Length: 116
Image (cartoon, rainbow, N blue to C red; front, side):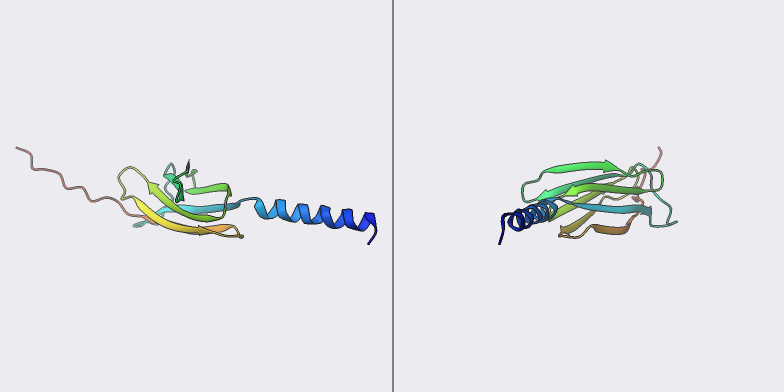
């Protein structure tokens, strides 16, 4: 094997390792359970397990959110929105992008006290 071939192999091997080390994209959409409409401004927290490192974002006007450069591993996703029940979801990130699709949130049932 000549020097040029060896350099080419090492270059491509290095590019492969670098590409494999990059994180994946995780994305989804948050909607209301009753009317299936988007929930803009919902808060999403992604917690890496077991070290509890967190990143957070909010949904856009169409209820969409995304996290980029998410390392492989196990995560907990926590959705919050005022007037709605919190949603928790376990997620495993592998070598492919993660598309969560539509995540449904239900309104919180709040019982008010009697007026005296």
